[in-house]
Amino acid sequence: MTNQGATGRKAHFSRCGRYRYALERTFSGAGGDGSVLLVMLNPSTADAEQDDPTIRRCQGFARRLGAERLLVGNLYAWRATRPKDLFAATDPVGPANDRWLRHLARCADRIIVAWGAHAPVARSEAVSRLLARYGKPLLALGSTAAGQPRHPLYLRSDSPLFEWVVPKPRKVLRTKVWTLPSH
Image (tube, rainbow, N blue to C red; front, side, top):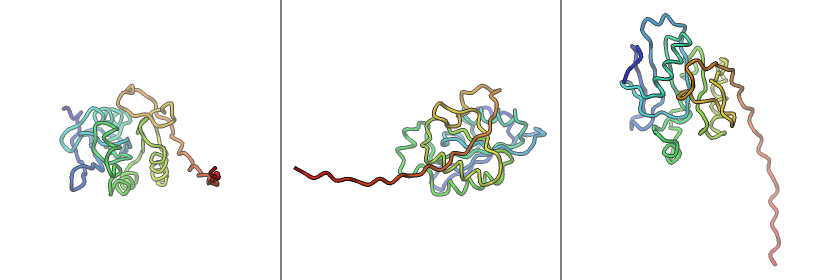
């Protein structure tokens, strides 16, 4: 698989290898402007040596933005190629994932949220708030019909960036439970 000119290639995994917490690609001679963090749903097959189609696409977006470094994090660190496998995992988030997301957000100059339609609302809202704490605008490549930030894989390479509005926490209404008398 091609590396699109990435000269620096890193990946950070759990000891068991089932969780990928971060991926980094640095571009040689990019003469770029800082780093871009893309936060997607979950990692697939990319690692420090190989790119998968999504990472190749993300590199294209980062280079178009003039970045010299691409950072990748995810709502869930569990490596899976299908969402149903991801959500079948006992702990799809991973024990160190939020710590890595905080680290990546601190290191990035720009943050793009891009987890697509399969993200549960509670997790996407929690991660949106976590990322927003770093005072950098959250950007997205558009939104799905359900209002989630679009995933980059099948988007046009010239897709515009929009500011992502962090959802406000929803209030859970407590209702009284009524017990009907038995007859």
